[in-house]
Image (tube, rainbow, N blue to C red; front, side, top):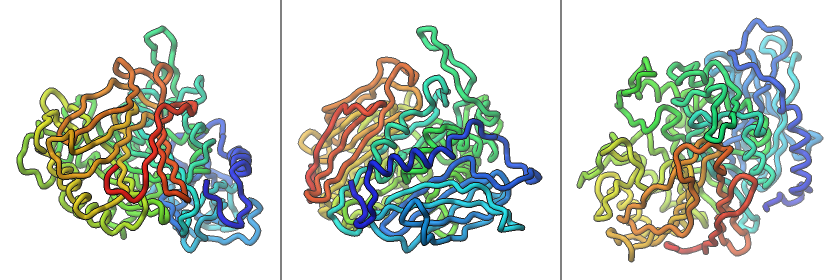
Length: 524
């Protein structure tokens, strides 16, 4: 793994330090109610800290206060915080649900950065709460440093929430111990349409118990309920420890709003008073931006989720948004479909940025799979594929245009990572097996869920010639995390050879499948 030159900071010391530093985060009981401005005492950051969109010289630090407070971040090269640098952030108040982000810039590349967040009384800066600490590595500017990251998605889905009998979201502890440089969450960070009950009886008679909150007792419709859904996951000790050590790159998908939603949709769901997904998605996106540090969601950056996050010369991550710009779900048999699943503007952006990228590897973080047939009801389809193995139709037309661009512009090192379907698989696409042939071979890897129901495998669509050398999925719908393993993917890039190794892992860390890819190729 990459360690900063001269940092004196090895992996073992990082794990020891993170475990010690996380003691302040493992709080026995967090209040789920909105902060009360009249509470006495000093501001508290009980919900932990997190860092997002880290580059070679920058990162975003997030925190939530329990009352109005000024956010101050201190950074240093060591845990002692000698020669610390201070960054004065915003005043946290009710307009952002008492959350806030401070942007760090001018950081040393390829180094371990220690930080701590202090919350100060806005009227008396001397009154500060206990600092909450974290650490992260900036990306290196040279190619010799190794790189590791994880990806997965789907958290607290189908009513499977934080179960104290199982130790909560323990897959986060599995990932934290492997000390990745960052974590890519590929969507469904919450299930706004899935309430969390107190208990569920499993098929074998065992009882699944959930930590519950008022906001998660119903579907999310109001801004307060969406905020509560994002806040729910931060009740988990494992997740807060993970956030304090591992930076995130976060995208969203359907369950941040409602299953299979698209712009302009009116819900046919009796649980909802507000039926317009445009209204619900706007509320969710606001809460999403409050609870995750994402650079492009700032008003001066256009308020969008899709973006490129550069992680040094080895890697660029292209984060897609297949929700906000898609057309309506349909049978997908259109012979002309300029809007598709990305929208015309996002597709232009992706083609342009892929061509400009000089990174050895270009990871395309897709919140939905490409060749898996994901149904939406009896006749419509939710993702790209629609089950017709012939020439591209509907949303497949956009994918064909993108793959053709990658081939003809000779964009090397593209790998697709996704989640969404609640099982894990490796899929290889090749023109010799495909109806559409004007592209170079590529791999797509699927992982997840983190803590949600497992579902059966979906069919492959033959338009782009996929084959599936590995798949692991349950044999029935909505198997609980107590019955079916949860999954995460791991990517290692060797700084010397440039080789990229993908490992599909399950809860506990067991490797299920691995694949080594060579750098500098248009197709694999």
